[in-house]
Image (cartoon, rainbow, N blue to C red; front, side):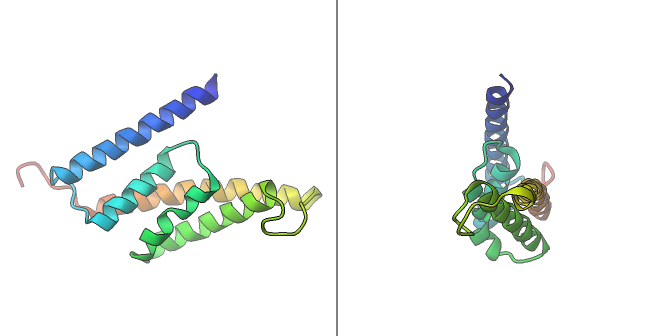
Length: 141
């Protein structure tokens, strides 16, 4: 019962955030060029949508390369840890020839969970940085 409700809530949260971003940019209340608005959309998806797949972690990379800096580097490090952990833990044969077991498998699982959590935090921080750079415009300006 919890999972379907949480999944629906995360979908609604993301769509609401995306709609708010679109309205703010279109109304001139938030100044973002197309690349930053696109990156903000991807980061909002990563930060708010709860049904993540590993490949989603790669989505901000091309747009992030257009704006290199601390936020993109932090995200890249977190996403790399999450992806390596994911593939070692859940997709044996992708990075190593045979499945891990014992302590190595436990460490791979920890790397996956910690990398995923760090990716979530880095996505949210990067998004807030982009929105802060977008300089919300005061009413009547």
